[in-house]
Amino acid sequence: MQLILWINGGAGAVIHTLVNHSAKVNCVRWIRKEGRTEKTFNVALETVLSGHEGWVYSVHWCPVTTRGEDGSELHCLLSASMDRTVVVWAPDASTGLWLDKARFGDIGGNTLGFLGAVFSPDGKSILGHGFHGSFHMWTRPEGSGDDLWQTSVTPGGHFDKVEDLAWSPTGEYLLSCSSDQTTRLHAPWVTPLGKSWKEISRPQVHGHDLCCITSVGRLQFVSGAEEKVLRAFQGTRNFVDNFKRLCSVDLLPHSNLKELAEGASVPSLGLSNKAVYESDLARSVEAEEPHPKNQFPEFHFKPVVLSKPPTEEDLLQNTLWTEVRKLYGHGYELFALASSHDGKLVASACKASTQRHAAIILWDTATWKQVGELVFHSLTITQMEFSPDDRHLLSVSRDRSWSVHNIDVRHMAFRTIAFSDKKTAIHQRIIWSCAWSHDGSYFATASRDKKVVVWGWRPRDAASETCLGPFESKADLSVEDSATAVSFAPDCCEEKRTGEGHHPPVQLEFGIRLDTLCDLTTVVSFLCSVHGVVLPHFHTLIFHARVRAIHLQLSSTIPVIVPAWKPQFL
Image 1: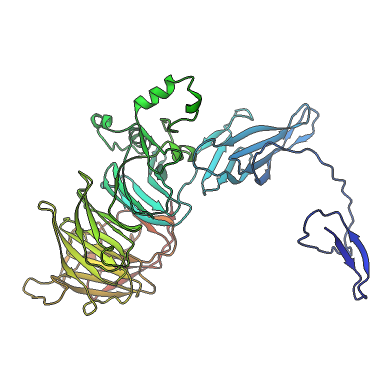
Image 2 (image 1 turned 135 degrees about the vertical axis):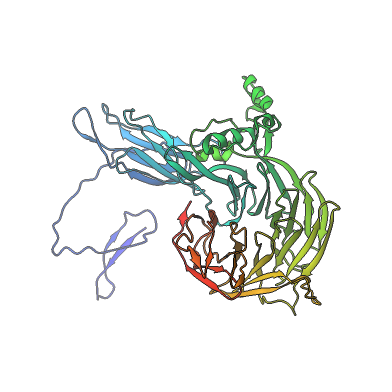
């Protein structure tokens, strides 16, 4: 590759041709000599570090230097590569040859190497970040040698948009699924210094983007991805032991632990988490000289005893849950899931453009068999929710309508009792979200048309001749932007009777802007009373971030706007 210098303003005469480049020249810049002091540097090649087997994406000098035997300064260099390793390079104190003093990384698992790594200012810690957005930290303890490094706790979470959330039935942990093809379990890590939310387990590492999730027991959940199959999962014995050790919560009595598998592992060419039992672990230890055809292990799970939240390596292969059942029945990719509060029923819906495919399928969690089908909507159902007494199922759809279905579990009878149509509908765009109040007296729908509508039961003496059945509109809230999520506060257990009459429960309405989980612990602590109505204590609410404003609806005529606050990220 040649670089040609031309005479400025001349007739195109060539001054000089530079031929030192061997590839395409991307940029050329002149350097002014006026007012500058010329310095000449003699640069020589020190060494070539050839210890990586993949692309090197990052190098970083250690801020702290040491002294050699002759008193010269010795520098350390940190390199991160796509070969799944981070290497600390330093010259030998006696010979001066550059050698790798420490090497970090992951041998197995679903990882694709490191994109960067840096030293801390004191040179005692190293922080690296992987291809899948994970952080890795190694710390050198006080008084230890230069070659002794230990893994440390780092922040964790999804690296792609979060699609759905589900609390465990009794609130010990939070499940989240994401387009990064993983399901993650978050819980408070209990230490003498207090509690902090950490990623405790990664129950599912899938091959498709996950779309929906629901919890059906303290150790069971169902998830759906961009495939036609629902998958049911169950916790493992190793997870229960570590969860009790880290979070001080016993999820299962000791007598029932024998029913669980020790762990789970994903086969090399599969998507299902296979159970690993104690007998499997014992058999792998006994086979000291395996046959050449069995040189690769059948599973990568190894029981771990955790005293602090698991590292990325443990999360990938040692915290999986067992897949207990696949549920077939939908014709297109799954989109929405809901479960009854008693965990006996699961409702599922998939993407649809016809009424036949938009049907809601009901599953019995005791047998994992299909027990019913609800056909009403004509387009994709965006969200479903069971009423607090599990007698009704509410669903909203892209067809701009909502429907309420009566659920009779004893006789396995299901029917639609109310719905909205073009004449009775208030929403003019897709309905994204729905929610029941704590006592089932009201439900709310949130739509892209910037409206949140609260519906409630009609008075018993008021006859209804419309498709709304026993329901009617109670309040119509207008928001600044598309309403994408809605929920009622869980702590409002009693309606407050005042001189002005009854007030329905406090309602929370918010819009999603980002895909990061945030923890809001003190939402309305400064609101002791509004219009004479005492607000109860709020539980921790976890949802998607960037909330512009919260609308507290205390009655159908008195809305109160609470300004947005800064969320505390997990």
